[in-house]
Length: 162
Image (cartoon, rainbow, N blue to C red; front, side, top):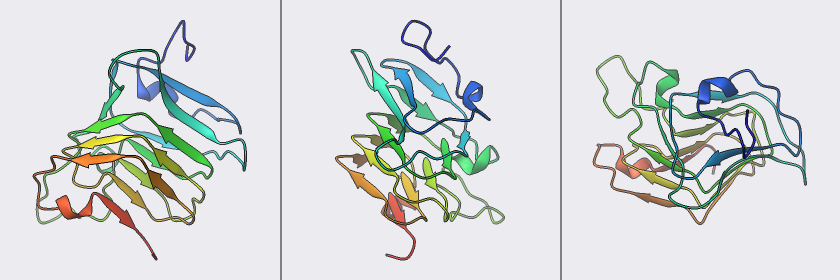
C-alpha cells in the first residue's frame, strides 16, 4: 500500500509510520480522506518528507470535522522539513462551546518545535484555520483560502512569533 498501484485509502494507516528523509506520501487525485494523522518524523534539507497529489483530476480532499479528534486537525506536524503540496482541505472543526478553544485549530498544524515546513499549492475551503504555523522558517505559498463563514475566518493562516 501507498504506491501508485495501491494508493492509500485511509489516513489512519499512516498513523505511527516512521517516514524517512526523501519519502513521498502520494494521494490519488479525486480521492477523499477523513480524520487526523500525526507526523512525528522529519525530513532534512534537500530531502523533505512530502505529502502530495498524483494523477489526473480533482485535488485529493481531506476533512476532520470532529474537534474531539485531535482538535479537528488533519495533519499534526511535529517533525521538520515536511512539505504539503496540491491537497484540498475542507469542512474541518468549526463549532465551539465554552470549553473549546480555537488556539489548537489548524487543518495543517505545525508544532512549535517544527521548522522548515512548506505548504504549497493547497486549497482550504470552510476551515476556520487553514494552517497554524507555530514553528520557525515555515513557508506557505501559492495556496488558496476561501469560503470560511465561521467567526474565525480572519485566522486562515496563523503564525507564532512573526
